[in-house]
Length: 171
Image (cartoon, rainbow, N blue to C red; front, side, top):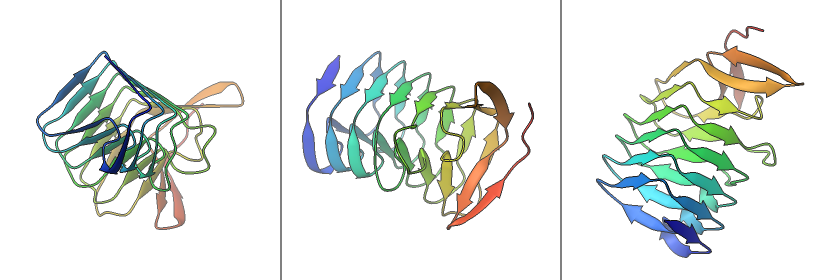
């Protein structure tokens, strides 16, 4: 399925859904105030999907409430004030094994508003703009970035309410 050039004044430029499965799809040039392409409520599964050039005030490609599994997707050139790629509004979201190219944005790729989310094994093209955080607990593990042609792995890079905090970096 392809969703292109859709707009919503509120959530989800192309899809606003709860208890949804979004598989093998393409989202391009969609926009909304929250979740440029997709606004997902509880129990949403998004897999093997491409998100390109979507935009929103919050969550350029996706805004998720809670209990979403977002895995094996490709994100490129999405933009938003908070979460140029993904906005995590509440808890129990699992963001795993995604390719996230936010190199054209000066904003963080993932914004976690609340905490208690799991972000693991993602590849970021812009290691200085990965994750911003306004909540209380978050777990990061084995995320990757490309820096000057070398792949590095790091547990996390967090911008905690404007104060950068770094995890270990291994080359």
